[in-house]
Image 1 (cartoon, helix red, strand yellow):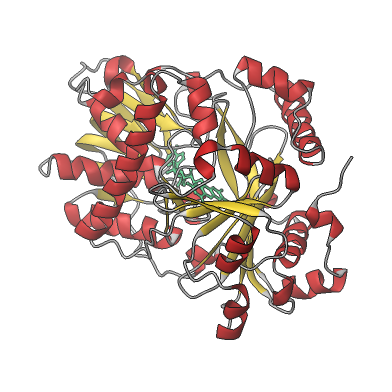
Image 2 (cartoon, helix red, strand yellow):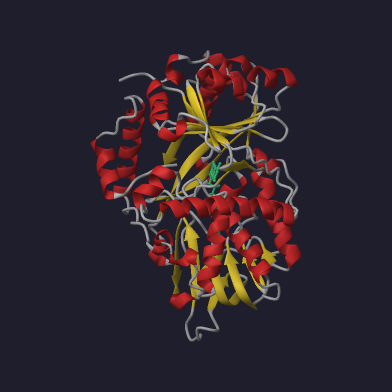
Length: 479
Ligand SMILES: Cc1cc2nc3c(=O)[nH]c(=O)nc-3n(C[C@H](O)[C@H](O)[C@H](O)COP(=O)(O)OP(=O)(O)OC[C@H]3O[C@@H](n4cnc5c(N)ncnc54)[C@H](O)[C@@H]3O)c2cc1C
């Protein structure tokens, strides 16, 4: 079994230990903001639309609902605080792809993939416009992103890709020298810069700003208000659904569920997602000299092409966020803060960071954290309606929800309005993915898949029987 570049060129153990000493176990993005807080629900009320969940998906749904109909009474119920979960702790890559990349999208929806790609581009353009129109102060930078080859077989993949051999409108192939002129790492062999298909955001600011704008548009936001159940007993379709919390009931004509990886309020979706823990480090701000040693003038988002991949980027104040690689599933599919401190994963990331940028030896990490990736078996969001169209839902973004939640919000609003639009008639929107199996099979299957993905990364990317079988079944596991 071949070793990876990160195993061949490890930094000294003391470099890793020193770099993490004093780091805070907390999302930098949430530490970096002082968001406005919202009250708890304290009484019953009626509304036109109840949104459950205060991450990007719920927030975009509330904002877009008010933009569509300013007179609608819209209520948003959040179990904890706005943006505390994945939306406040992600990498901030706002990708155009709605399908977790072209390969996954083309394999699952070959007939409509080209249109899905256009819709993804339009979605990212619409987010960029909304940032300006709504004045969202979220450090939005349309930098694009570079797919990096750090192993010879990955470089071969890039060279074989016909669109990657030259320069087309928005995609630039970078050979080793050109890539290192962009970003200087001895691990880089080749890259492809997708110049328009990604933007970077400050994830915490995006969530806080969406909440601010929602409130200014008249959305009533309630924090620390977990929804316990939904019922329609004795209600006509126009009366809608009772959205029950322990402090009051919201009777809503329409309800949008944006609860992502958390236990679904609909029984049918309980097995549709699993939480997979992803780990992240953030450095202190780099000095001008440290930044100059890397280059990175165009500030692109970066990600390598391994199954167990790293993603990294600069923040507004020139820190480096470095995340990914380990993707850890815990038996029982629970979301728990106790899973967030995992020294082996954070140390491994630190080691890989100094392999990538040995010139930064001595830099310290100010923050380390983790979050639950909203994994579905089709690697991207699924959608649906329930109770005769009174309720819609979107979940399972599988680590690529920063941009796709805006698209999902439009899908849910179209579904609730029974509009029959292009979005609601997409096969990707209409078809439900297979659920994950119950425990213990889920755990055994996911661990076998992870092991196989790691083997593939050590074997020139070659997929073993487990992975080929899952591919054939259209099933899988990814972060
Ligand atoms: C470490 C990490 C890195 C990532 N990096 C990227 C990236 O770079 N790019 C990208 O596109 N995606 C990334 N993702 C994924 C992305 O963050 C998510 O897909 C996206 O934030 C999903 O938004 P959401 O609103 O659906 O879910 P969430 O942000 O999880 O919000 C769901 C909300 O629902 C609330 N809720 C749940 N149940 C209830 C209930 N019963 N009552 C009331 N409220 C409830 C929760 O409290 C939570 O606030 C990453 C994720 C992680 C964890």
